[in-house]
Length: 443
Image 1 (tube, rainbow, N blue to C red):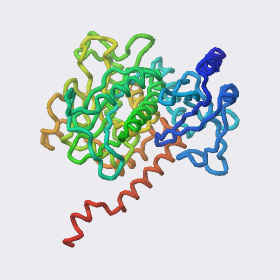
Image 2 (cartoon, rainbow, N blue to C red):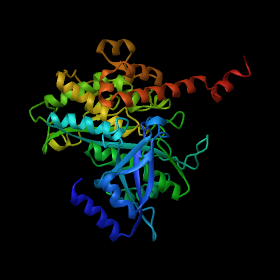
Image 3 (cartoon, rainbow, N blue to C red):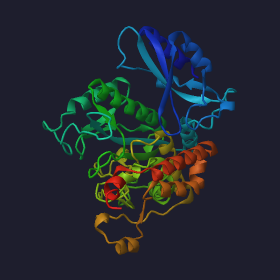
Image 4 (cartoon, rainbow, N blue to C red):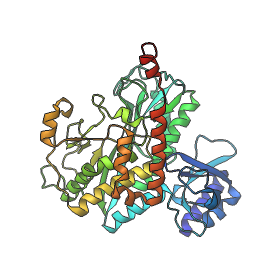
């Protein structure tokens, strides 16, 4: 740890009369975990980390190897603005270590770091900019009740949550997260706040903070925010369109002004890697049973594996807002949803893209027609394949994936597959309200 970073944290904590510091980390499913230390323990934590019991954390250690060390990253130190008063609270994200100081192979943040190191060895820095959609409901009960009937980009009394969004944006900026856009989305009570692109590790930390901030501000106003991919039948679900690019120094490695699409060979091979490997990484980017209720035709979510420039029915889009602009050249993967573990999701996206670059994958021609309106025969003729239709299909594809195993490491890979298998078994044996309504009175 850089001595200056440590001194900065200690100084800011003292000047702001911080009393407690929350040490944050995630389990393999992407749920935020934390424990608090007092400011008196801060210097010790920065030097040596803080021990905790990892046996109860999903995907972490077994009981007989449960001792873990949470090593805070001083670059993530931020005051939490929703905890004002005399007892100021700050937070830091942590890397999880084994007692001897080695990185713990079950730590999602470490999995992402390993893949970023592979990119660095190839000369690249990985940048991402996600668009995280979510819903506001009046409560968190089984029958969600919307706050409004607004639609896409509405600025009318129908969008009653505009003040909630504004307060959320202001809070995000107070914790150092830059926001590009915020607006009402297509579905009733659905909203989107887009974060300004940055390096993938910082963005994964930002994504975890973002989800908490959205929920904290909602709770403050006695409503409930959810990142569930498909909470409302018959309405659009929530996605996490992920804009991504590789830079070499301050140069965008995706940009080629002499190409008809402004895409370099690197960009084309990267996108081809995503297209080829997306079925096997889908269980990571779309990790819940409910994720596949969103990935169906007719609700703007991508189903068909293709790329395009303007076609929003494609899986990957190369946005054309600023054609010919180097910094703006990027690939937008539209399938992930905001309930994924961002550390693992960014790791497997990067791994798929780098595989395309290393093996020189060829990018097929873009498909600009509406793929939803094509016949099955036409899609077959054009070589358009589909994403997995449910979690079980996705798990089976991941199980056979050397790419995902290498990206996540054996520990996370195996724990994740086990967990998803249990989730699918619980889902398939559950008797739903739909089945009771459809069959009970007639069979």
